[in-house]
Length: 140
Image (cartoon, rainbow, N blue to C red):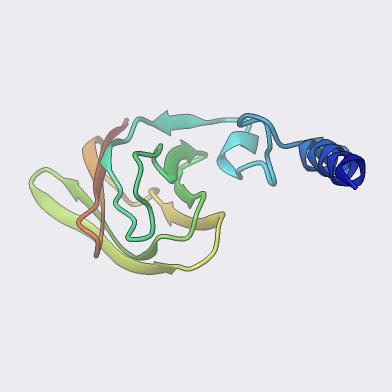
């Protein structure tokens, strides 16, 4: 009887390490490449801050990335984070504001920048859990 339990345990452990040919050890799984990573002309924004999520207890990487490609600012969320307030500030003035309900992974927001004057701008993202993420970009 003990042998049967041991064999079941052994088989169970070997199955959990590989499911459908995909190894689940480490962080080597990518369910979907991000849209931003596929851009050919990509000028990434380096975002700083912490984006709090009510359901998480440990420190995680930012669930958002941003980049400019061909005159469009792309903001992409890798996880659902709820309601997010976006704003762009330039020359001391808020030039763009929007609210998005990010309820699914890979939510993409695109903001055309063709009507913006040359200068330095600050992208700010906030959520209801006290998260604040920001990054600067320059339009020439």
